[in-house]
Image 1 (cartoon, helix red, strand yellow):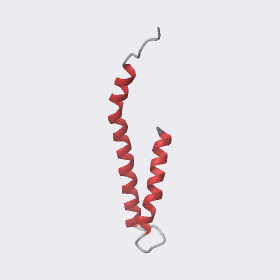
Image 2: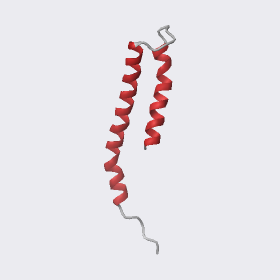
Image 3: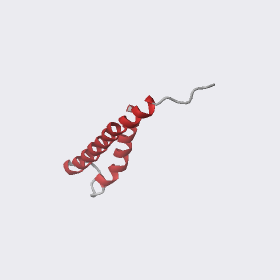
Image 4: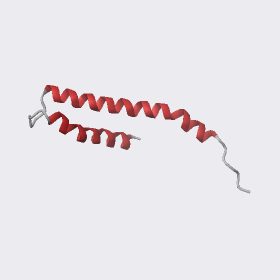
Amino acid sequence: MAVLAGGAVLTGIFCAAPLTLGGGSSSLDASSFALLAACCGLGVTGLLAASALSRPLLRSVTTRTGPRPE
C-alpha cells in the first residue's frame, strides 16, 4: 500500500507541476507551491479515505469460507 501511495503522490506532483509553473515563471513561488501542496494533500486524503472505506469489504471477503475441496 505504501508503494501505491508513494506512486500516486509522485504521479500527482508530476501532473500538477505544469499547472503550477503555467503562470509564466520557471520556478515555484509561494502561490504555486501552495497549489502543489493542496493537490498533494487532497490526493493523500483521498487515498487514505479509499483505504479506510475498503477495509470492511476486504474483511467481509476474507472471513467467508470458500468451497472445500472434495
